[in-house]
Length: 229
Image (cartoon, rainbow, N blue to C red):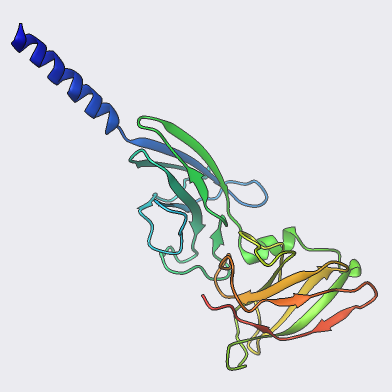
């Protein structure tokens, strides 16, 4: 009898252990800002909200329907979707796509958790959020480094708050060889602008310039320092 009870207890313990160790499944769909599926995107999964470091898990690329299936241990994670034009894992550059602030996920053992990510690049967001030029104030100038030298291939972003997170509210196109940029902002209100190479810009980036576009004022000229990233 004691042997039988021991064996039953051993079997129950093994079953509990197997259940606890059962992996979780993240089923993600990656879309662009127009709601169309994105192929070749990857989900980067982290065990903390700090996503500016190597990921703990990286999915295979999404299929033509934008679908990804990733198996992870059960736990709490933060995930972002990325699509790099060159297929590498390095820093994002203009033209690459990103889903912005990380999405918190907490899949349980044996659970299949569905999640959707919308990725955008500077040009997509700029087109989607572009204001009507006739109703906007034009901000022109140069993006400069700490020494005052012009920076090419960067962009200017603007938010209504200093602590703007994720994909910015307003974006310029990439700066030219002389660091020149053009940004359109609605008249009225107060904005905080910075410049960056990576997308999205780092949350809490320093060196922001305050801009107050006034009605009837058509043009603002200013240099914007490149945020340190």
